[in-house]
Image 1 (cartoon, rainbow, N blue to C red):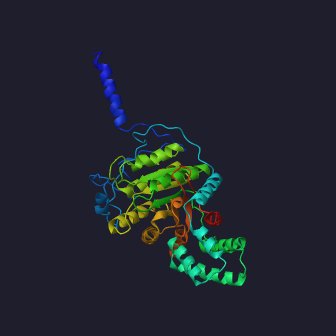
Image 2: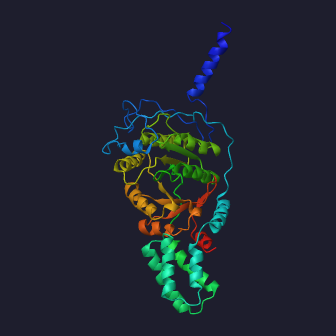
Image 3: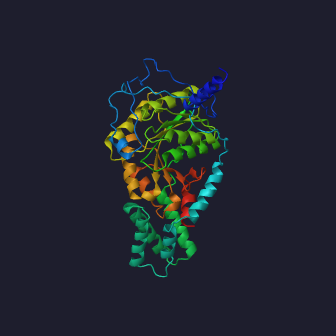
Length: 402
């Protein structure tokens, strides 16, 4: 009997670990509540029999049909654990202050593979500016993904100013080019993140985009920005299709002491997880709830309908204050097509532009804003945890012109 007891204790310990009972380090005022299967009549997330796991393959996600958008009764009940199973306990980090991020990002942009500003300065400083030079200016701007209409607008303005200026020193050329680029990028747009807590509820933010642009990483980095601003944050892992997405998000949260609401069921209903995250945020009186969503191709109607439903279900509890679309700057005009579709589905309020340091196509900032009337609010210039910061018009243009 004495020999059997240690064996039984070892088996029990293994089952505890497999059951996902390793607690997450949390910064919020209360522990995350495990929500019961029985709900009140006003809860739109009603039980549904069964749950189908979805493998992490493009075909499985693309072929998934969205729940009926006409009502909310088809949503699954999601068991939300108050832990992050399998995650190692790691020290809580202190994120870099926002001011320090901006300095680093400007330095990285100056050193990046950007030829737009340099090319324009070289062309406009020529001894003779004829039609051939202006053609090269247009070509440079179009290759930088500025877009046809903004390109013509900038060229016309430069033509007029160069004609009036007469003689041109490099300093004069750089000054006029800076002024015109700042006008084009538009400093009048409101780039403030809507993350101020309301009187009775937290601010709610959704992060959307296609597969592979780095949404989960962006949510994690943005959580660091908000923590650096002394905000109480809660993350919602509504990307339930990609393997280990919830654990990845929870790891980002752990690093800055931010909890994550997630489901341990593969292929769980993303709308249900998002709902529970907002409900937990209200219960815990946090400042901001950030919801990570699954990547989806903009031409897949069923998946876009599902994204629309996630937003609608969340709004049963609280208004969605911010919908950020994450775009890869290296995709150029294809990113613009993505932005149009997502904007129609969930009313985009801001753009997060990643990988801006690896491309010469900084003009995509202007093209997206012109097409949608939506500002670029955040930019990422690297893989580091603190390589995400608010977008600054003058800082961006100065970095382009080196």
